[in-house]
Image (cartoon, rainbow, N blue to C red):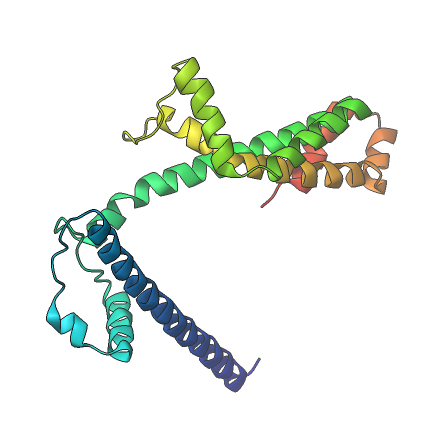
Length: 232
């Protein structure tokens, strides 16, 4: 690629970003207006009086609100909550817990999925493979919030083993149930994909060569095939 092609690609990506930002601004402003109208009706139905919004906000036009939203995005100033707290402070306070939960769910789901797939290859039992495959398909067809409710009913309501929510430093106990719920789909997808790839590798010339050299099945699966199918 020459310099002109690079400049053209950068310009295209920048225009795509501007277009996305403009669409996001329109959707956000429309949803904000609908929410305010719904809130007025809600307070009216409950017999409560909603404080009047700032007149300057009412007088602004739709286009001006869109550019105001874009300015807040670029300046990273999202205003304040109804309690007067900065929205950015709430966002930053949740970055570490979110990253912790994401890493936990992806790592646990991937390791369990790949490990289960390799174990199925070693066992090589059709009924066990069919059982695990059906279980993975059930997980993929079940919404995550349903899995979350089931985990809460079992491990908190019945057994009282795990906390139902919250976050406390780097305490892993608070991540087990939400991490399991989020990582269940990762587990199911990795199980199905890793098993298919492992079965294909078992029929390759490389594995046939290893078998001819006297390598055991467990060593082949958990060392050589693992390296080939591990997502990196």
